[in-house]
Image (tube, rainbow, N blue to C red; front, side):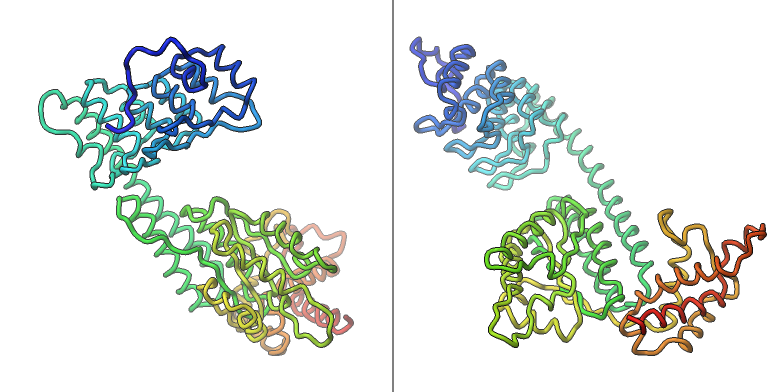
Length: 483
């Protein structure tokens, strides 16, 4: 086996950091690293091994523990690879250094790391167990859930390396038992994926209208979940590119809400490490002077790493030039574009459909990077009435409307007819769902105005009527005119 350690007697002359790691001379190694901390991850000639490789391979526990816990400016490289592509955990595994393997795993060493021949630490531990009849290191790796289905460059799993014979039966039973346990866990993961889809369906059920958009989102979400299931079953499939998107539509059509739902879904299936959605506009990205925009934009990108950067009114980054003054919006857009291939953040550009064409045309890489275009239609009066009912039935405790309810006469049909009668198409197009919150707040204020202080009817005190809604809408219209 390439890279196996030479177990011949050690030389009496030990003066290198690697020689001290091999000899297990902790005081001398500590002195050496104190004199020259840069030796912590130094590579030896030919084998290109670090001191941690050597100490782990020889199971010098005190040295391994010291190197892993050493508080120095340079951290020890857990995943450093030698000339065979082996990490320190590979070295521990193939030399039956069980305690060293345990220490490395406790400090986060990767069980999935592959050597140049595609073998994982478990492959090498099995190889050693076949030679020595010692299954302790195999058991240690399996106890940390090493993947029994991992394949090397020849397509062999650790179990495939075991030939027949009574001497191998114990090892075979051990691997078979863990393979079955992992199969059951994968089946449970599949159930969790189904649960994730149920959670997604529940979330989008609160999005009113947008039927075609929800169909696209459902198709896309299910595809991502099935990709995760295919990988969990050992299938090798192409990775999906980070799904950068454009949300096109008028204000109040649910673009931000959908972005938040997507953030939770992408985190749920493991595409994103977090579910955060960082919302930004032009003022959050663009500086007033030369040299300000780049750092300002990069700070927002860094804040969004691991989640979604939601660029609202993205068309404002590409303004129509009417003077010779330089506009820095394009610089912010280019800064965002430069990180979209890195996979650390997903970007959603949002805005009106027509002005967004300027953004698309301004950067030749836009359509290559932005692969999903979702169109958000304006809400009908019936859909606005449904939104109003949903908001009243799901108020957060911090909301001004928490604990309040609609009068039975305020049915969806009645509210839709009232909105059709009392609002203009222009008003609905400009505000969409944004019309509902101020309407409800004004309606509650009108309820307060109607009440007498000697009222003790608790139901009456929290019930918003159609009269309150109508008065609230008139008040909102007057406020808009005065602005």
